Length: 293
Ligand code: FAD
Image 1 (cartoon, helix red, strand yellow):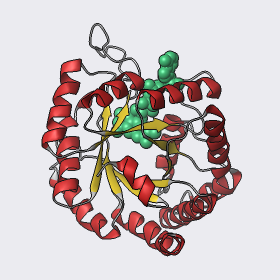
Image 2 (image 1 turned 135 degrees about the vertical axis):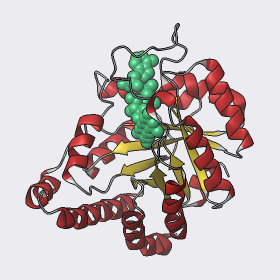
Image 3 (image 1 turned 30 degrees about the vertical axis):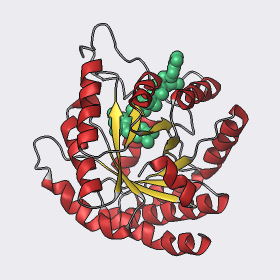
């Protein structure tokens, strides 16, 4: 099923994100995670795409298995900054063979290695270039990434929204947001989308924080701000991992309940391959979701 159609039939689309195991670990480890996640019955599961394309085959293999064996809709992430046109075309062929109907089309992070060799000449500069090509295939529902606090590289939020609108005009049919910890920032972002005439559904990205290093990594990578209410939790429990995990999950649940009351079209849970956390969070919001549908 095309994910864009899911937003028409569900009041709140609930999705989970998983990542493929490292290339030197057996792929089966992720299937253990999926065995546990399947009982939650998410509306779709997305599979990340390794930066630089290293875990490419695994993304398609796992997304295909989610769809065909677990009978859950899947979304395959795809990045283009380091890809050639041939590589992207071969991805499309493999995805179609694997029965994959949905692609999250992104540029990808710029490699940290200064000696990284990009295709010469560069074949894709921005996500919009990839989105245009996916649309030409006429086989996939297309999602794109969006950033409630602005993308870390962008000089202004206004420009970021302008580029986001371009992604939608090129063919993005739904958006999934970067994680955030302050719902008010997300609500202001939704207003900006309204003003810009961006009308496609947006899923809010929520990451339950489970340990302090993860928070530090996320602030660096995603540039997201920490509201005082959440900072207090981190400060109080940073040396007590069990308590921090409990509080992190509870904070995510509260965030989601507020987002559902706001009328968000979807919740995308960055589950970090942790089925227990996903189960606890979805278990807590499932009743509200059922009662509102
Ligand atoms: P773009 O939309 O191309 O934007 C990149 C930057 O360029 C932004 O600053 C934008 O404002 C600017 N820009 C866009 N168009 C123009 C233009 N015409 N002129 C000038 N500037 C422009 N990364 C992975 O490697 N693998 C994953 O699986 C993955 N999954 C993700 C899932 C989600 C939900 C999100 C939010 C991010 C994910 N990322 C992933 C990270 C993503 O690849 C990075 O954030 C990346 O740096 C930007 O990708 P993009 O598609 O948003 O880029």
